[in-house]
Image 1 (cartoon, rainbow, N blue to C red):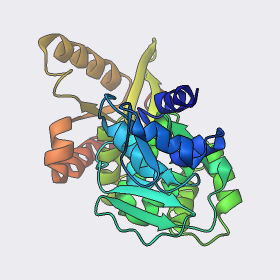
Image 2: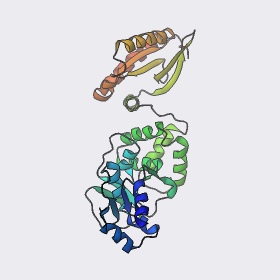
Image 3: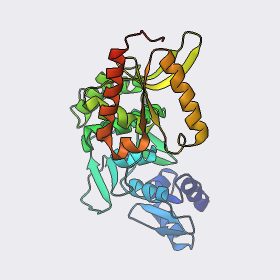
Length: 311
């Protein structure tokens, strides 16, 4: 009977289970030792058992680590970002936040003890206890450069992991605590507001940041058209100038067919009174210093051609 209980719990946790979870389901220390004496289970840490034969995966490793720090422990910061699908978040060291006092030191774990982790700001991803995206966002502003945290939080927003409203509620709930990262998150939110629409891609977010640092502000996802018809929705437009900025993907826009479509699109936009600036994905990442001069050429053209564009 108890083996069935342990197996059901382990199936939810990628083949691992915590001893305190077993105790919550009525198992005594003696019953747990009986499990370990069988050929089906092995102890991987003080508090965690592993089902023999289960697949060793990154998710199993994360579950093993966080379960070892007690029932009120959660994957946090960059490790949480990895679970939420953010790029550039390393597997190790694993960041864990929890309420248990411990002197144990693990080279592969960064453990941060707090007095309390509010349940409303925790969740699970694939069976792994993790801080909620809003709390993760605050932690990212505490442990990484502002620009890096900004891009990662934009990514969580664009994929629906969090929203303007959820960040607003989080700041109202936690904003008076003086926690590390809260000032960065508040600045991020105040710069955008609850109705902000984040960039749809990492390359777009990077271009916005690079150009903003040079004093060029951009609007996203703007509907434009000629006098006769709607031309379409452009990626970016320079604030205060009829200058459209399109970021072309080396993968999807280099083909002959797509180059022809871009030529027609550009002609339609220019007929509607807009200036077209084309940037390439490789330049955004490898040659960011080329972006602002290219956009300023478009701004100069717009100043010379003062025909009001059709929006």
